[in-house]
Length: 492
Image (cartoon, rainbow, N blue to C red; front, top):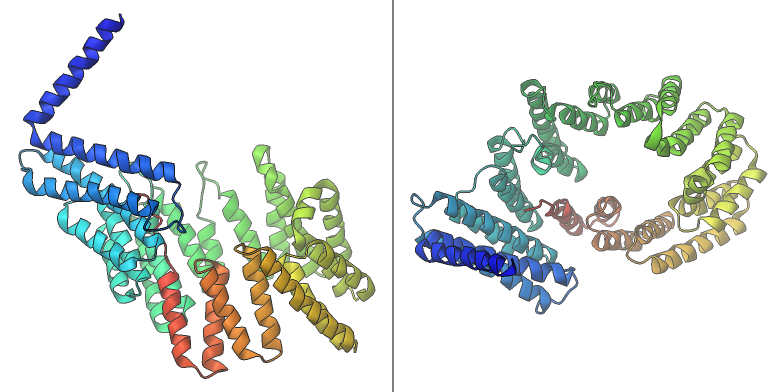
């Protein structure tokens, strides 16, 4: 039996070899597949990280993908496309995949102009269609943006949304990167404070998502477009319109999806101050929880407690919080905001002695939380109001030491960024504008692709312009923000 199997395998391999030797297109494709397999194997075994030496293993991996690309382009120039359309299409896909890997590697090394060249060449050398072509344009746009060529990036983005419409894959899945572009372009202009451009892009985004809802009502695009419009309306302070859009975000049963229902309740609570409707929304969600969804119960109970705080029903708020602590101790232990809420209920009820005790407990047991970091400054302010200036000054000194300690102990983690922003706030309170701006700028450069990084950069830019009269550094930061508001995250 083994001899028969061996003979069959040998026969198949012989036939494949003969086929490749007789067909130059098949031979070229086979060699490309082999090169790509070798490159993927090398990359997979290396566990590539951005901090690896680019002249070492990363360089070897990069060269492996480069060989795939060069082989594919050379083959496409010699193989007759009319005679071998299938093989040429497969060579283009392999070039697309290898170019995507190359782009990601060079992006990690912040060689953005090289990324642009790779994408340009791919689009020039191939006749890619559909999802691969759209993905190539998205990578080109992101690379241009990261290289600081925002006008060119925006032109590519707008071309992509117009050309690849609707943003659907053949299997009906949404092309998320393409779908999100109109909203993201608006958000970039809004973030850097360009109100005129932001207004123009907001209109474009609204029309885009409205058209998708109208033209493709029975696809996944409709609820996703309603959700995108809800976010846009929320970001621009149109709370009721956001709620209307969220009410149109339905699940497979035709009911309003649970996350949309929760967000509606959040908007009633946080923005419209309609606490009765918000509470009714949370109560309805709690009552509907079953199975795996019960994991959301503690979070909803906490939001219910905040409604009672807003309604100035502090004993009722503490009753919910105490029940939460008894029934879900892990949630309470892991979420400093719950302990902070307990302290605030006493504070708002003018029971300062008990409030201070609860705040001190927060500082001792949740030191590296944002709630604790903000509490240092809040307590210092309250102590100053009460004439306890020496204690307040001592607490500010403790705060500064805590922020520096947390930043050192949590280096590279979100807590470091948060601690540095509070350190900057201490500098600001003491009118030390240069150190405040410098610290915020450092947060941005250490955490360039995070929300806290972006906020810090915007705050630093404002200080340079308004307090230090340094428009050059302010403008430079704004340019950097535009560059960093992107990432090569499309799988290719």
